[in-house]
Length: 103
Image 1 (cartoon, rainbow, N blue to C red):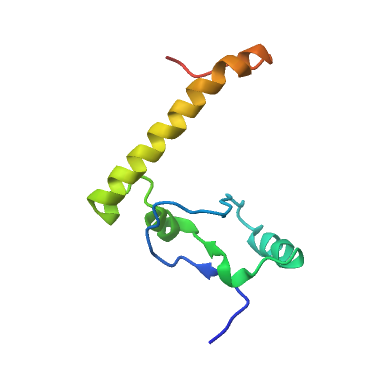
Image 2 (image 1 turned 90 degrees about the horizontal axis):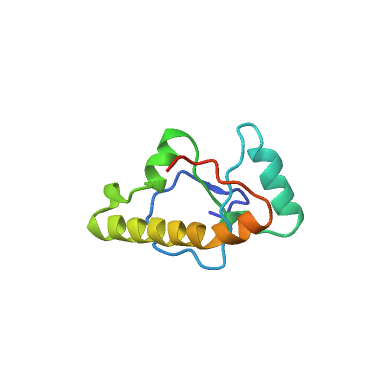
């Protein structure tokens, strides 16, 4: 069966998404967003939507619900992101940005 709609809350852990975009869409804007994607030629059958608590469980921020390997991958992803943030701070400060986090 073929559909021109995105997949909603379908489970499956993927360690690395290549050539993809991740976005957080505000409540009530999903239809507008998917219509805009379709308008510019995005194949909606290749779009995955995670929403609500079910979507959050599927996203599994810590990787704990998908086993040890997923947990290790998520931990590494967080460490890499934190390292990037730390490296970018000097440049941000030179541009006048301030870090408001407490240390």
